[in-house]
Image (cartoon, rainbow, N blue to C red; front, side):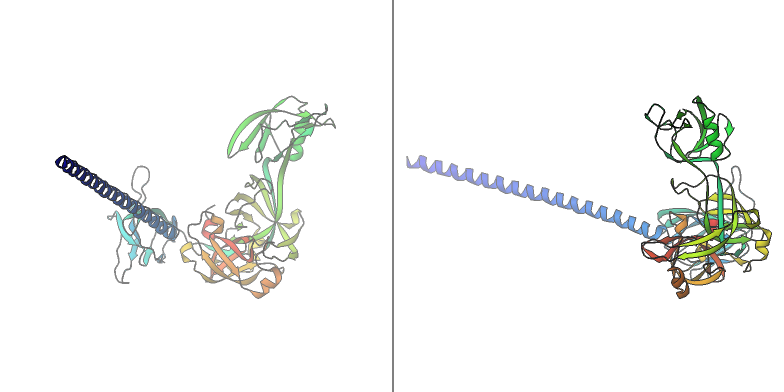
Length: 472
């Protein structure tokens, strides 16, 4: 009996020992799994950190070099971007063959001594923007730079355009603007009560805000009155409207309805012109001009107006509403829309500004002499001037360039300036509406034009690079 009891006790002890080993093994396995999970988590965290760091570096350096660099033909220029980016610069090929032989010399300075040259026999040369790069091109041509961050990571392809140097006359005079649209612009769709007392909207689902109506049944629309006349003559029959929508021209069918006054209507609001005041940026020696630094957009649709014709008029500034933080001011001008006051013809309305031909007398009586243009890479932070006519005559006023965004997504906001001139601050409070187009001058060169005011800080405003205005 006692022997059997001892045997049972030994078996129980063995079972307990086995169970303890199993628990220990499970604990060890769990610890290893947790360690693997933790290690995996750390690897994932490290991977995410590397990706985030890489993205941050790209974001930091992306706008330091523009996607297009312009350089003057026949003039040695220095590119000093101070970015750890390097790569190859080579000639752009045409569709079938290489463009004619290269006659450029591109110098790269690492210790201000080293230099490389490129001739017709050399396909490409190496450039390193961690150091100053000196460039000289003798002919109008186009090149491409394939750049890499730290010489490893793909960065961007940069177009290098060799351009003819340009001299422009800075203006700063106020201008009255009148533009006529090509066709009539639909600025709204609405309803009206027809003869039966029902609310109707014939244009709903047919036309859209922002459409330009060019023709009715093949007849070109001359202006708003002509459009209303043609709709009235339809007598409620189907009409084919030729419209322009998002740069595409198409035909749509529509039928007018009579309102309570027996007038045939489509239920749309339309516009055929716009007017206002602004500032002329420059005059060319060939009697061309550029102004505003931004396009003329419709006040209701915010879309760039489709220009058929436009006219510049002499303008007299008769009032100033000072700007304040949160409340932009404005210049008030007096314009007489008659032939004696015409000073130019507007031929283009683009996002870079309005352009056209100015009166020969305007160029001859200009207050200033032609000056060179400043390319993007030549514009620096620091003192500059703007020219505007808030007192009736063009004057220079001191500003500071506080930001230069070489690769801004909005070309009208490449430069940020701050007004520091006490006289201008007293008169206007800073940048106000009507000053759009005021030339920005730095180091004796035309750098750009004022485009917008910062609503929350009237002493600050945006500007466009002059080279952007010249690419319209």
